[in-house]
Length: 398
Ligand SMILES: [Zn+2]
Image (cartoon, rainbow, N blue to C red):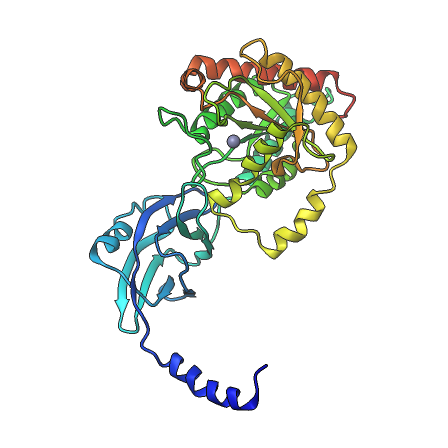
């Protein structure tokens, strides 16, 4: 118990501590990476100091985003790491870095007018140290989704004019979701092949195949090397009016001899196997690895996305079976049945959604095949056939 005497004694001590000279430490940078894309540019500063205290401000005329890192100083070597990054295709015009006399490292990003910043401090995860993640959001971000919808509307109008008497059916939109991207490389093979790169290639091949049929339009949740949060992938697919959602992956397993493709759906009754649970846990880490921290709004949205219906799970399972059947004609199959677990990216109450592990990138033979264009083409064909068969036989209205 603190008696009055103790309390009186403690008070000056606290003041004394407060006025102790502050310890300035070196701001050691492990790596700096930048991921430009039309929606936003993500800058990740990986640093060795575990807990840093920062403050940031958005300033106008001239437009600048200023970050202060307290009780730190930066050496020339670390200064260069940050100053030498490539700013091409980003809203950042210039970076100034200085040690201020008040023991702060001040980083000033001179940006295009009205660029907004979103800043998060991400604790060490996977192979990354602590990161300061800064997203630069351009004033008028080009809304890929909006232009996708506009183009589709225009095409519809044109078709109507060309064949006025025929009832034009509205196109069926398929959302293809290449996993990972940007800060999140996904799994990495022995030869250095990154999951994020091969799955994007397969997704683009699949888009070309699906769109050979004029009845279909494909919406890619990402079409470059940048990160999209798991929740935005779902939201985008929904806004695009997708009837089917297929997430493409090529993960690693602890044992390098594990091989073959597998198909997963969302399960509301726990995971169908330990392996499925492990895989879902690994995939769900993607947000943190990619540099996303859940905000309050995300927490609210989470409950909405958690309300997956049994109809969605049933249809996803049918879609999964068709895709697995097709994959078995071009590749070894890891598990003959569709597995279920709590994959965050499949939590969409309305759209039949599956996650396809096309192969194990951790298996050297499969890594070679995943790098091979001809094999990517075969996987894309199998996925295309599976999706088409599902749509043809489904009782759902498209
Ligand atoms: Zn993955």
